[in-house]
Structures are given as C-alpha cells and as structure tokens.
Length: 247
Image (cartoon, rainbow, N blue to C red; front, side):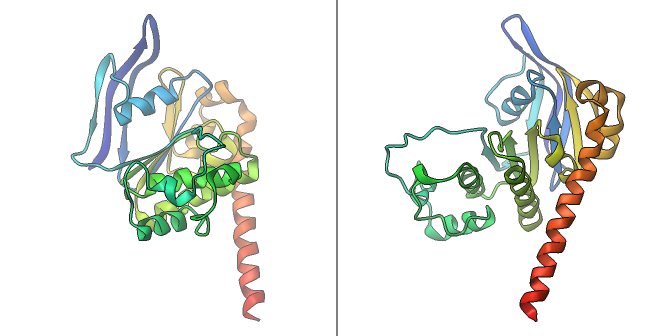
C-alpha cells in the first residue's frame, strides 16, 4: 500500500503554472528521488505532498495516520541566541532525553547534544535537522535539497547516512535534489521533473532517457559510476581499517 498517492495534480501561482498533470506514488520503504532544473516545480511538489500547498487540480492522498519527517533546505537561527542541540530538538515541546540521543545517533552525530547550535559546521547543522525529523519516527522522510551549501564529500556522506537510516528504520525517503552525482544511485527510483514528469524509473533508466539527457547532458551518466566508485572505496577502506584493528 502506498504512503502517498499524487493523482494528476497541477499547481498555479497566479497566472503561472509550475506543475502540470503530475502523478506519482511513494511506496513504503523506498527511496524516491526527484531531480530537475531550477524552477521545475520540485519544491512545489514536496509542499503539496506535506499539505502546505493546495493543488489547483488533482489531489494528494496520504495513507491514514502516516508520520512525516521533513528536512528543509536551510533554517535560520539567530547566532547570538544561546541554544544547545538538545534544547533545539526539544522545541516546541519537551522530548525525552532517550529519544534525542537515539535521533542524533541515527543522524550520525551522537556526541552533539551539548554543542551550541551557533557553533555547528554546515554538515553538522544538517545532521541535526535530520535528527529533528527523525524524532517523530517518520514512515516517510522528506528532504528538500538538504545538502545545499555542503561540499561534495559532505553531500555524499549525508546521503549515505540517509541510506543507513532507511536500512535501520524501514522508512520511505523522498529526496529532492540537483546533485546528480550523489543522489542517483542512492535511489530505488528517480523521477525527472520539469513542470511535468519527463521520465521515471531506476537510476540507470532515467540517466539513459533522452528527456533526462536533454535537461542535464549525456555526461551525467558517468555520475552513477563516480558515486559507486566513491561508495565502494569508502566501504573497502572501512573493511581494511576493521581488519587492521582486529590484527
């Protein structure tokens, strides 16, 4: 049973139509990535899914009681405001310490609870936003270009953490991104959006589609191999370190 069913929606802002006749389903446990150029309607689609925007046509149906977790592009916090990570994760209502610790561990930053929000690096800040989304134990985790501003290694590490979260919790993930080199092969399914659905399928199918190449160029097919090479290299390095530690 799908968690979210988007049925033939269109979205207009005044006279401007940003999405036209878009349909998709998000299934339990899958990682679905939406890619597309700037202005293609990616964020509007996500906002329609979470209920922040009402489609001018069609409808979005969420399964009864489905729990959503949302990681935004950015969040501004007054740098002069003294606030620990634990305090931030307890807003707007108190959260048990055990839940905060579990969420930070799932986000890959188990030691940040006492750190000041104003002193976090960009990568740490995004991991804390991920932890905030995970506190509610979501069945669907939504990420709106959550690594914008991070360098390539930081982005790759963040998306590998998302794969770990999916594996550990079984939640579905909807990612919106333009960083093709790190998200494509982290996905079970990819939808290419440009005001409408241009193409969809596995990463390999989408990367080979003429519509995708027209938007991003044929050179992006190598991004899949590049990501896998980096991913495999990290895995082998980790295994090598484990072997050395055991010896």
